[in-house]
Length: 359
Image 1: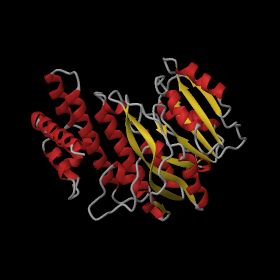
Image 2 (image 1 turned 90 degrees about the vertical axis):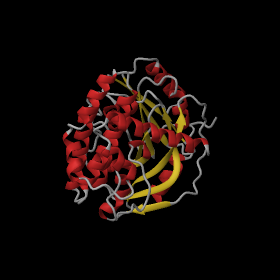
Image 3 (image 1 turned 180 degrees about the vertical axis):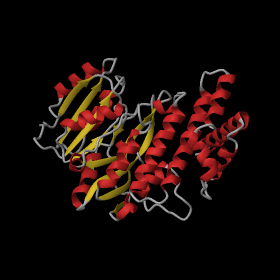
Image 4 (image 1 turned 45 degrees about the vertical axis):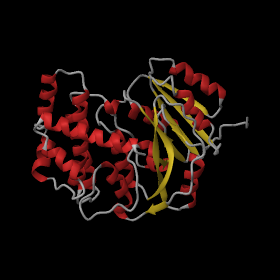
């Protein structure tokens, strides 16, 4: 084993919020300690985890001097990331969710792009899904993918917006991106200098979007790579896949907050992005209703409530569906009929399953 030491000023701080992931935590941390770039610090933030994670965090820290542990009361993912930022010392910072993994050359490759291109304040990359049950061991990722650097005006974060919602007709994103906080490395001095932090996901249903828009508003160039360095563990018990009665209200609050931020940045199509994002949340909420354990009457009641949402009413009056968004248009047209929407959803699922079986 190669000896490791903790640098006073590491090149990268990797922040890992930890909550109820005892089954996966060691593998996640192993994919970080095994990085080809050794000059890193790893900050495990135990967010009041009720399982054996607090003790496991301490055990992992005892095995590698680059690992620091914060134990705190449970406040959620966004605020756990903030706790890590408070003690981070790296030039760059990356966020990794504690049930996911990263390729072993992730930090070396991404910092190489950032360090060799003046004015680049974040490097964004893509991901692959892995099963929550299937065994998986990360390796070195392919680095033959394209790299594009965008530094001009609002164009630099159009790829992030496209990952949130379809762009208006006539607009083409120059690159492909995700909008999750874990899909980038960020220059920490931009975060510190501008006082940026994550809001609570108990306030914003996708706190990543808010952080990324706030960062984009003040950062310089953004590098986009098509390399897949992150392995996202798909779990049927994920927070984003669970029915919650207040999800539509929280979704509308998030989308309206994004609309204001984008308008303040001078994005003329801010309302289009906000309403397009709301359609995505609306579709997901319908699926959660269909798959919930509610009675049929309860399901239909929540389904009807969706149409009363203020932002859904705005979509009906104002939104111009992109020409390519036929499925989205049909979905919205069926929004008033529970059984028609359910049949449409099942049809889409069937088509996807058939396409997958032919691969």
